[in-house]
Length: 572
Ligand SMILES: Nc1nc2c(c(=O)[nH]1)N[C@H]1C(S)=C(S)[C@@H](COP(=O)(O)OP(=O)(O)OC[C@H]3O[C@@H](n4cnc5c(N)ncnc54)[C@H](O)[C@@H]3O)O[C@H]1N2
Ligand code: MOO
Image 1 (tube, rainbow, N blue to C red):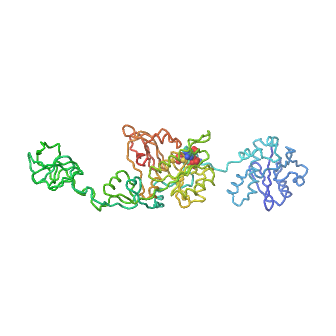
Image 2 (cartoon, helix red, strand yellow; image 1 turned 180 degrees about the vertical axis):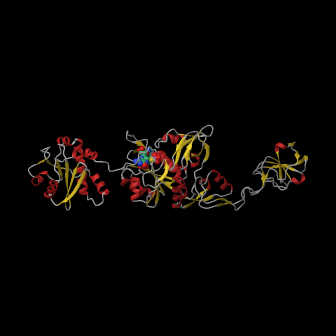
Image 3 (cartoon, rainbow, N blue to C red; image 1 turned 90 degrees about the horizontal axis):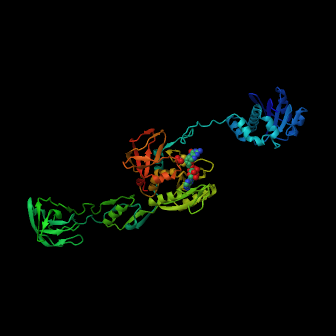
């Protein structure tokens, strides 16, 4: 039957709620017992009525009188009593009571069920529902029909074809502000140890280094040629007799050279006493007994003063310096055999996700993928001079993730996780970091990498990197790199970049900073990877750097200057 009205009775702690839905309106009444409910129902204008109750319909026979029939035995009567499932439309009932303060859950449920069943009746769908249902409870097989029949109570966000549309009410932190907060929150954590200079490449100086000796230690010749006292020479052709012997690097002459004479001298040789100037071999002629050349020659030409590079006691390198190959050259030249360096920062790397197979050695089912982020992040840490700590892979199991984070906080100074960073059902990393760690509710106006979660776990900073490998790399380069640098005892580092002409077109909306995978073409212009999809790992490999598009609106045409941040500037 289709009915003119639907009445639903639900049980509350202190009695019953009766909701009566007729075309265009729903009323609700508190009653003490079924008799009162039926009396209220009979006072309202009658018509074919479906009465839904949440206990056995037989219990309602007596109060309802002889006109009533019970479903599922009957499917039509002036008053048809049916048992309804009180769990149906629970979410809608909850939403209704939230939206209407003062409405109890029982009343809300009665109202929503009455409305939904009446709507189905008005659609003509009720007879089928009554006839076809095998369950003794009305609606149990039709939960979705009931749900659909209700008018929408939720307003969907306005659909924009923009995965970065900002959710309503969320404050987005610009990248620079997030970076500056991060910078203020972190301190160096790595202790100090002594290390042989020869082994100190990549380490970070914990104390300044001063020159033990000047470089060069003595005045010496910068070229192969002939040395003499400048005072004895002048303009025009010069001819100086040669002393026997020569001065070579590592083989000092050891005696004075008389004024007016010259000595054969090689590059790096200490200037003998009496020699202050050297003429380049190519500008001379010699028969072995004397040397001739055209004057004048500048005083002290082709010579190097003692300490002209670094004087003894001078500051050679500052604390915080990350020792590169040239720094090892300098330290060694200054006689510094050992340096105080920071212990290597231990960087824990953990991958999360049920779909992840930890190693390409292992078979992967179609629903599984091999872990791309962990090898990438471990190598980044190693390349930056830190001690990578492989915390492995863990499925989407909050307890296991918690256990690994505990391990990580013990074994590492800082933890990089990937996956589970946003706010979905399986995003356990961010959920754990919010409930048990100290996740700051930052939402960073960044693409890719919006779901980056920055938190601490048992005192260890955690970078909850997004699972998408492109986002994971961008967040690691832009956020983790400077932060790790500071924690390791070096300074905060800004990415190195320079402006180049674009070889692409793009129109960018304001409100977020974007990083595009890019490389320079033969004419030095930046071309970008064909797709911005954040799972396109091939683009990471294709690129030699990133193009950074600043926070505001930008229209890029071929030739527009854009900022290119080469991978090399990130130390990769
Ligand atoms: N409703 C929304 N969905 C998504 C949003 C959003 O704001 N609202 N953000 C999207 C963006 S942007 C990103 S990035 C991802 C980040 O999500 P999670 O950090 O929670 O990461 P997962 O969901 O676990 O994984 C995302 C993606 O990456 C793959 N993945 C994960 N780990 C690895 C790994 N180690 N190696 C290779 N690939 C990995 C994973 O299978 C997923 O495909 O969320 C979007 N969704
Ligand atoms: O932009 Mo998410 O951070 O890329 O895929």
